[in-house]
Length: 282
Image 1 (tube, rainbow, N blue to C red):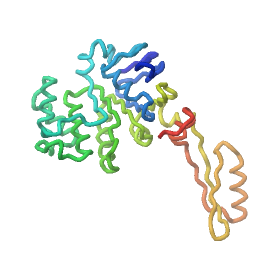
Image 2: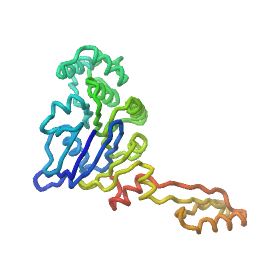
Image 3: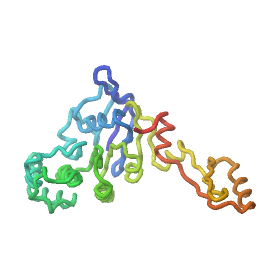
Image 4: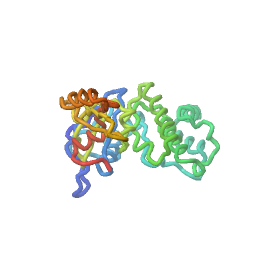
């Protein structure tokens, strides 16, 4: 579905992408994880045919999106960072306008609104909607032409937890229908919950790409937490799971009668990011 081969993108002296190799299979959900300035939005612009690479090759559904943008856009939907809707128009008017640009009829508007769960907002002006409602309407716009590939740029940025959870449910439904999705985000919990694989970008370079479980297994460190009684209070101690010292400690505290709890903890994507980039995700 998507192939990037040694892709570099420069804006003057700024190196936005640096030799990126990436492959996304049909039906896969890939997360692009990284802080602001990591290269996520540049990657999306390349995939959408909005800019050409400085060097390297970009292929979306087998073609170059820069030289054959109509072929790609007919089969791709994009949810940009920021809804990109006309606030003075109603939800229905917005979608009718965009449907007309695709050469689609009223039926496509009804289907897209229903798929995004906003069919009850047709007569509302976009300017009166909440952030979560706007994001759903923007998703409906991206779904108008029933694209095979969906690119979502920071889809839940600025949403409250309830609205973000509802949007996540919509994304899970799209995954279940076999859509290919690329989700750019700086939210580690989001990409871990939604994505088959996670590509970590840092300063324009792809520093890791694998399933969340594999990334945590290879780059993170699992730990054991042991809670013991200390006088009137408690103390929690921690060891790497791979070290044998915790086994001896647990046996000793059990014999003393001070052992209260033993918990294992797997690595987090935050630890993976720190391990692969040398810095925390801001």
